[in-house]
Length: 185
Image (cartoon, rainbow, N blue to C red; front, top):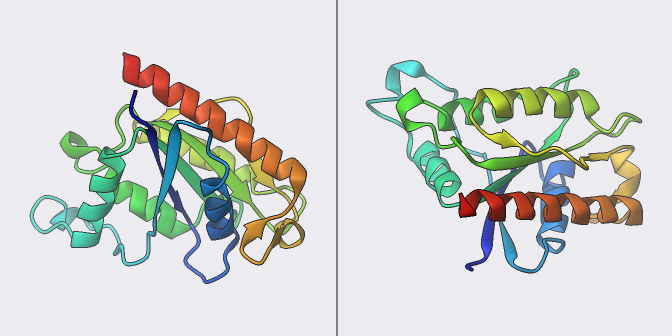
C-alpha cells in the first residue's frame, strides 16, 4: 500500500507561531507508512462568493489541490477570543466552496490546538471540530492534542514537552489508521 499522505495546515501566519512549531514537530512524529506535508494559508484572500465560480484565486486553487491530494488532514489552531482565527475559517470556507467543488468531502481530519494559557485552545478545538463536520470532513475522535502553556512547551520552533510529543504520536497514529480504513472503502 502507498504511504498515507497527511496534509497539515495551521492558523499561524507569524514567524515563530505555536501552530507552525506544532506542525514542524508533527512532521518528525508521523508513524511509519505516512508522510506529513504542510501548506501555508498565507496569501489566501478574504472569501468572496461573487468570485468563487468565475475567478477563484490561484492560492485557493493550490490549497484545494493539496487537500484533494491528501489522504488525511491535520489542522493546527491557536485560540483567539475563544475560537479559531478568522483566516483559518476563511481558508476552510474557500476550500469547501462551491458546494459541488468541496475539497474536504470524506477526508479524515484531526485537530491540534494551543494557547499560552492553561486551557490549550480547547474552545478553539471544539469550534474547529464543528467546522470540520460542517465542511464534510470526518472529524476523528480519540486523543486530541491541546498544548497548554505553549510558551513553556515549545522552544526554538519545536515541541519540547515529552508528554505532548507522546500525545502527538498517538493522535497521528490514530489519524493514519483512519486514513487507511477510509482508503479501503
